[in-house]
Length: 364
Picture (tube, rainbow, N blue to C red):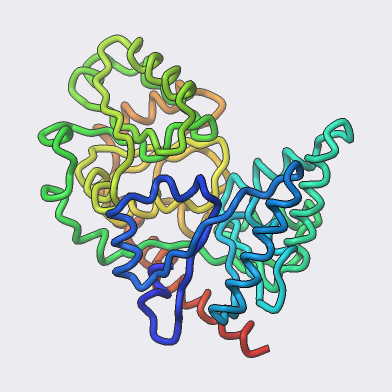
């Protein structure tokens, strides 16, 4: 959105469900405004139990499309937002999948029995939206393969979100680093605290680390504004039980803070159960910080030979990789990673691909 908000010839509007606006504080609203992104009123979740609410949202979306002369509606997640594409008309429709939406959430609906007919119906409504969309893009080939396997889509455009290499690599980490992290040796887990990001696996690996690492380094986590409170409390208690562990949990961070933490870190790791092409990994590569990822089927063009890999079926593997990386991570790997992210994960390059898609649709 930020890329097209500052491009000539584009007018960008954004809307979402009511609960998704809760984390949009004044700072983020100001950022959207500065990037020429127009925030529209929000709407209710899709609900089989509330047809009247669905009807109101359908009317609202179609009125907005007509009133604002919107030519393209681009849904930025694979589930559940595409459901609304079945309800709107006189506009081109694009869906972008990002990872867990199409690799975990939608497949889980595919396998439910008819004892849960609403979930079965939800699956078929999502499938209809994907089939009828004018274009579907994914951030990884694995997502595209999964869509094809489920019968959702044969042709999918591979367009990664990409990262702003120049801004990231020149960020002043001293200025933007959170105060509680100043003068600390940091090991950073940048993905939010949720089951899909494998928190139990992380904690098990950390608990096996050499005591010298636990005493000399501070582990940094991000809670995330949408993390379920009971789950967070459980994870926080587990972290507290690791003898000798020093850790900081940040509720959320700004983009500049995220980049600054990565740049100041001695090591970054991310080991989700499923993934797309994670921007946090690309950002880490752009600031030349050692990186460990899980052994998922990542894009080889980007990640092949650029970082170390931990086996997700063994937390001991992550333990070993962390211990080795802190003393033996090769500098040449950092240079290869930077070159690859500059060539294949550059936001400007990827967004120009998307711009071509936009123009091709409106000219049809």
